Every structure is written in C-alpha cells, then in structure tokens.
Amino acid sequence: MKPELTVLIRLQGIDLEIRKLKGEKERLPERLNALLEAIDTKNEEIAQIKDKLADLRTRKTEVEDELELELERLKKSQQKLSAVKTNKEFQALSKEIEEIKKANKAREDEILQLEEEMESLKQETEKLAEEVKGFEKEAQAEKKHIEETEKELDKKIEGLTKEREEVVKEVKPDLMTKYRFLAEKRAGIVLAAVDDGVCSACNMNIPPQMYNELLREERILYCPSCQRIIYALKT
Ligand SMILES: [Zn+2]
Image (cartoon, rainbow, N blue to C red):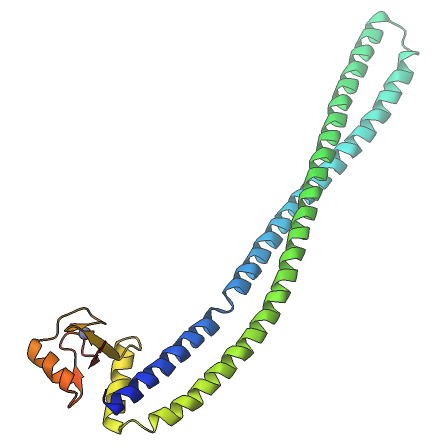
C-alpha cells in the first residue's frame, strides 16, 4: 500500500476513536438526567398528595367542629325532654333528637372515612419519599461515576489528540484538506477498501480499468460513487 494511505488509515483510526470517545462523553449524563427527571416527577406527586391531604384535614376540622356544636345541641335537647309538658311537645323534641343523632352519626362516619383516606395518602407520600431518597442516592453515585469516566475519557482523548498531531505532520497539506473535507461529509469514514472491485463503504462497483489502476498503486484514487479515498484490499 502507498505509505501516504497507510498514514491516512492510521489518522482515520485515531479520528474515529476520538469521535467515539466524544460521543460517549456526550451521552454520559443521560442516565443522571433520567434520574433527576424521575425525582422531579415523584416530588410533584408528593406535592399534589400533600395538597389533597391539606384539603382533607380542613374538611375534617369542619366536620369535627360541626359535630361538637351538634353534640352540645343534642345535650340541651335531651335536657329539655324531661321538662316537656305535652305529648305533642315530647314527640316533636324526640324527633328532633333522633335527627340530630342521625346527622351526627353521618358526621362520625365521614370523620372516620377522612381519617382512613388521610392515612392511606400519608403512607403513599412516605413510599414516594423513600423512592425519592433511593433515586437521590443513585443520582449521587451516578454523578461520581460521570466525573470519573469523564476524566478517563478526557485523558484518552488528550492522548489520541497528541498522537494525531504527530500523524498529521506526515500528511501532505493538500491530502489533509481532502481528508478533512471527506471526514466531514462522510461521518469520519474517509478511506474505503475495495474488495474484488467493490467499494466496501458504498458497495458500488469500481470500473475495471480503475480497479486495475488501483492495484498498481501509482496514485491516489477516489470511489466514483462515494468519493472516498480507495485502496485495494489484498488477501
Ligand atoms: Zn464508494
């Protein structure tokens, strides 16, 4: 193979590795971001449940206050009962007492129901808070992992960049210009091996005459379909 192509293949290898490492670095915060989003969602859920709990607490206080007043009224009505003179009065007051008792029973039931509902909501918030704690712990660990991995990746990228600088020195400027242009247009894959007359990058046939020229390795040739720099794969 022409030595200038060997150098370019090395350069491409370095560039692809740098590209891969930079991609890894970019994707590093993905898991952390998902965790932080999950924490936000859970915290919103907790806030909503707490709002609902506050509403239920207000309602419970209302019903309790009503019940207290009505129990007072009941006591008074019951005291009056012993003092009534007529049967008619007795009937009316008895009826009133029954109604107060019935209404109070409904109040007591509602208070119990509210308490049950509040208890279950409290348990739900506790469960969610536990989940948030777990996520936060995970996020902390993930942050540490990101920092460490980032350092490792930076070190690798730095090493490769230095290596690249040395390799680039061996490439003629006009070839380097072409390399840079193709690297940008072809996602970093600048060179393509031609195997049995077929470009391995775009899978198109190389014209026979060109393929023969390629085998002679006299000058740098480009794939007529994808424009990549081609070299003959020799087995
Ligand atoms: Zn091609």
